[in-house]
Length: 123
Image (cartoon, rainbow, N blue to C red; front, top):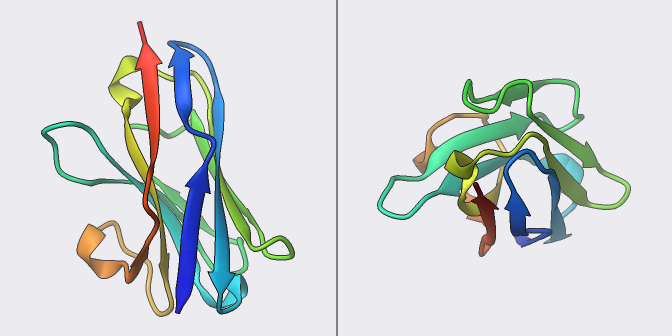
């Protein structure tokens, strides 16, 4: 089992940047595929990005391509989401997720979830 703790959220103006971090404890991070989802008020959880165990392959939602970058440092047991050119539509709670066996854009496919960190983008 792995425990996930997100940090780095906050309030930022449109056009600004934030970097989210997800610290993993428990079983070794290199065993897991990792990802980020987000949920805005009144909306369903939405896939943002994912990264394979080694970090060799990533997948990004169309809505964030060219603006967000997912990365990982397995030596630090940490996954990152660099968010640039933020828009008010990016306002949501951002969740870090982990999975042993598969990568998916579906929320129900991911086994482990962090508690979330709030990102608010003002216009």
